[in-house]
Length: 545
Ligand code: FS2
Ligand code: SF4
Image 1: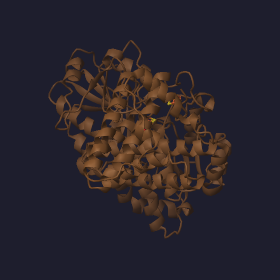
Image 2 (image 1 turned 180 degrees about the vertical axis):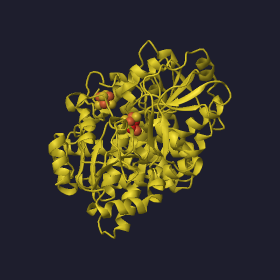
Image 3 (image 1 turned 45 degrees about the horizontal axis):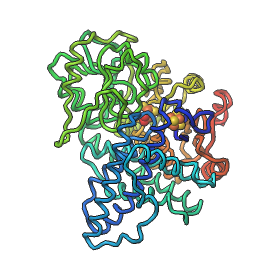
Image 4 (image 1 turned 30 degrees about the vertical axis):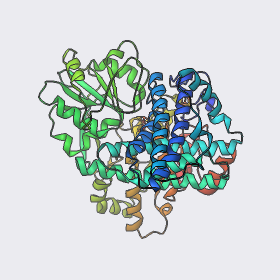
């Protein structure tokens, strides 16, 4: 195996024996091979699109396949073997449809469109030939890694949107064309840089589409005080990002005597008006994903993982963890989607009834719901505070949390920021400072949580609005600094989206991605002013200087 897609890549180079995340070598290889198989389907699928053939089945399969390879989403070997088999079958099926419709397939003949195998052993042999290390030039490898990981994040957001019935053909076409382009040896480094920026552009579209899907279905997030204590009934904990699953679970638990709590990236579900009507939706339990080994234990009830980030479960609570969607882990019960798009969570509800209520680990409330609609409704107040000097600077501290000790930097950074600064956050990065008492500025809390990592889109909308209000020519003239924490591949698409929007001088930590070669880092430094982090004191001076 060679995997270098997340911030925990061993020695900040790549995992080669077993993932720091717990992913095994064979699963890692099968994930690479699945992506390769998706490239083969994509080549025929793009041709099918040109002929007007309905490609929705393959579009969704490709999207979900990419999603399943995101860090901490799916660890199940059998699942990847099956997906690869299905991929080869679908590749043949769509090829035949193209031929039937009079299309030409002779020119679609790179190895990804032709190879075939049908046993687990032969998949493993094939996988050894097509991983990232098969790309000799390290800069090309780096740029192809960047685009591949960006596509994984893009696919995740696209899937959440389609789960709510929102699809955009342009996004599917881009994902598939980009997959095919990664195998095109005629692409130069410049072409690949351009492809990455295009991914950022499509990333903005996908996040906007998901924002529309979420807010049209569940209303605009509202300023909300979220309970972080516990009730006295047995309960289900729901984690991940999928709001459709959240809705289904709340509906199905209503009136059963089983409560519902969110964990990690599902916290923002508390901000949506459509979910507030459920009295058995108690609040948020615990913190970011990486603390689940302790928090799932003390929760006492079953846990539903709707997306990453799943940590390989400890035996003490493994029988209480359920997966759905792109998530998987050997030995856990997976809840499938029904033909009509619903899911049946009754097995989890019955399980919950037999469990003790959650053990209290903290008490009180946290505040959130500062997505674009809320912040723009406060625009006058915000603009006045900036004009009067009450707010000197905003800090976008979106992204991911993680278990590395070096991430304490973000808590220290938030604490050390001067009192006339405001943190704009999204994603699970927030857990590093959302329980600190950082106060407010004239009633505006000093930590404004927009929501999940995909709600970084909200932060971009807010920045663009402020640029307009202040009549600036360039988004970089705003008093906004970017100190972003990354962990997995959704942060990659968020980064590419910000670059596409012209945001400069983004600082990324706690380490720069292992997949960026020195030359690619140079390109990012020279063209976009991208930087890493050093220490709190020097960084604050640098940002405010
Ligand atoms: Fe956090 Fe994990 Fe949101 Fe990432 S819960 S690192 O998936 O996507 O953010
Ligand atoms: Fe290593 Fe991260 Fe890949 Fe897991 S996802 S194998 S931790 S680089």
